[in-house]
Image (cartoon, rainbow, N blue to C red; front, top):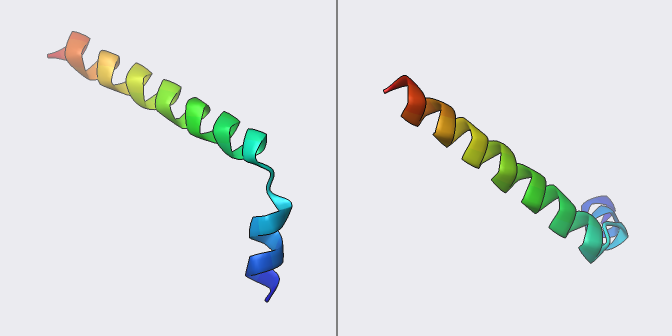
Length: 37
């Protein structure tokens, strides 16, 4: 029940922002790996 309320409390823009931040940090990490190799 609590988890459902938490999920519903998270708005779509918040989710999108978190996802974009995750993608950005992942791309940065991949780029670092490429330059190292």
